[in-house]
Image (cartoon, rainbow, N blue to C red):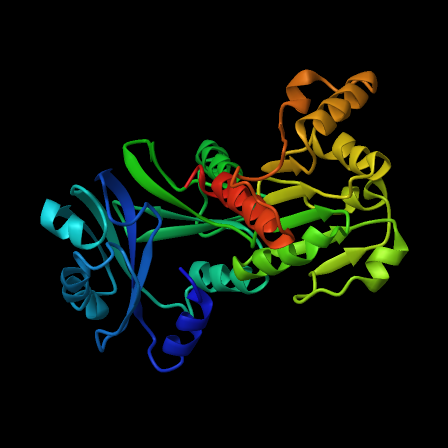
Length: 337
């Protein structure tokens, strides 16, 4: 949910307890996906959505009973075809919503969640759907909360790598694992003219941006409408090992210089990055394949390269090419969600 921390910070200054509603399961064409959230205060003010408007009123009404009890409740709703049509779906479905009364100011797990969000660190929130118990798992496996079975921790950590919320059943108890990822990173190799528009589009979609190019003339003189989060005047091999190359990292290879592009690809291809796209025609890409093959890179790794880069929209201008690239990146980002 956008501005999750800001909403919590603002509301919890005056109110000790808020109710958090989350979609934990869906069937059919549900209006909102698993992991969708809504925050509710005692004055029935709400932020976020669990159904796009179909059942929010009922959820807010149910939430009022939880403020004094400080408990949790699981609700099931059927979304009719008529209601689904009103929020842009062709047919209805069902959703399961988990409501919890939460004290964000004093509860250790929830307070730690906000701190991780503020510092842009990925983490997992695990909630026992049978009891009002919660745990926070950091990227390094550190658990906040009462001890959890190691097998459950291991299964939950898979969700972080897969960028996917899920429900796990362990010893006849159901746990909802919600991923709170860090901001995705767009890694741009080469300060081509397209990079300027691509950085702006990435900023619009809440990506951090890292630009790498050893050519000082470009890194020093290119004007960006939105400044990259970081810019390095160096070969990719001098920088990439310092960066997180995980499933929240997306890479656009744009320099058009094999000395730079291949230098990056040899490191990126064996990594866990979610996306690698490379600029150039089919003919240019075949030459790239030949070079990488001669260097011993396997065909399985080479096949990870999306080339020509971007969604095929017959783009001509730098802005249109940047749009095509960003569209493909968002497609890959959302494929597990």
